Each structure stands twice: as structure tokens, then as C-alpha cells.
Length: 92
Ligand code: SF4
Ligand code: SF4
Image 1 (cartoon, rainbow, N blue to C red):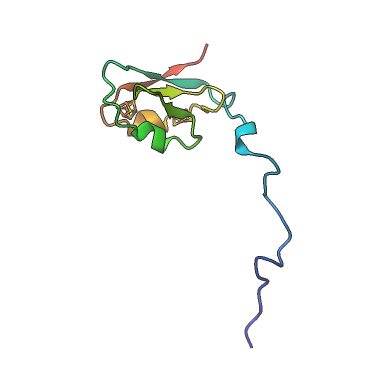
Image 2: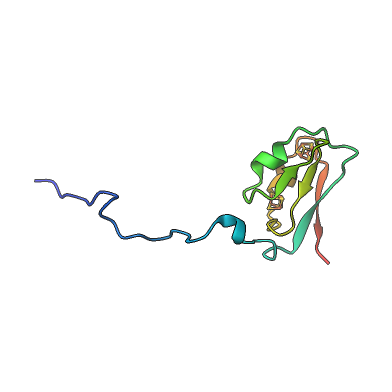
């Protein structure tokens, strides 16, 4: 006879954030931040989609903007930018 595992309704709650992630700021985690050369940016928006923190928004004119309250300095955006116009720079 096979063992019965509990269904998800029977499991105790865990790892559930009681608040919105908007209130969970990750901007003070990193030592680097992205510097974007907007003159070379093609406005492809890939950095926006790849950023794991949702820190990059796209302005009305199509340029990426980094929200420093949430950027944790991971460098994913710089790695994924197809024209390599993002350089990680040390925070002051
Ligand atoms: S460094 Fe990481 S967290 Fe910051 S904007 Fe780039 S992908 Fe997002
Ligand atoms: S990935 Fe690079 S080229 Fe594309 S929008 Fe972001 S900064 Fe611009």
C-alpha cells in the first residue's frame, strides 16, 4: 500500500509574505549598480524583463530606468543586454 502525502490544503502555511513585495526593498543588498549608456541603448526592453527584482521600468520615451530601491546589483541586466550598453559600477 502506498503512503499518502497531504494535499496543499492540508499543509501549514509557510514562506508566505504577509505584505506586498513592493514593500520589500532590496536596493541596499548590492555594492554595484547598473550604469546604462542611453546613447547606445536600442530600447529593446530585455533588461526590464530579465531583472529578477523588477527594478527596471521603461519610461514613456522608451528608455530603461533603474529603481535603486529595488536594484540589488546582481548584474543580470548587464549580462543580458544584447548591445552591452550596461556596465556595472561601484556604488558610492
Ligand atoms: S543589477 Fe540586477 S537587480 Fe539591478 S537592475 Fe540589473 S538585473 Fe535588476
Ligand atoms: S537590454 Fe540594453 S539595449 Fe535593451 S533596453 Fe536594456 S539597456 Fe537598452
